[in-house]
Image: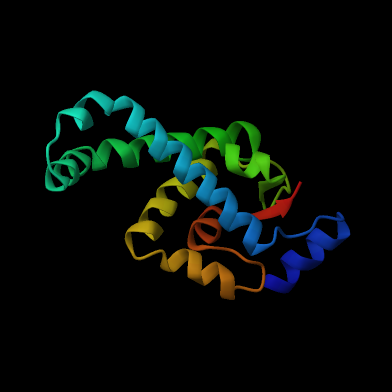
Length: 149
């Protein structure tokens, strides 16, 4: 299967995005979303007195934060083929079957499995570093790859 994907990409003169670019794009997205959460909860954070209070406040919003991440990932990948981090680094997500921007279903699937991968110690991301076509778990389930734009 990996060889078929590589051949298909080569025929269309598309190239897989390097792991470093993908990692940096993920970092940008995580920082952006974390900053957004900080802005939204700023008043609540100001009222906390100890580090333990801050941790409890953050934990109280963990499901909302996961939902925001899913909506962010699904929307941007569906509409633009890339999140803001990916756009800045000039990489994008495509479906293997069409070599085009993922459908809404594929984008949502990918976003949900990103969260699952993060929850399991980022093992899905580690998998992507070892995979011949650099597919993480969320890429495999959504049948996508990340390419240089």
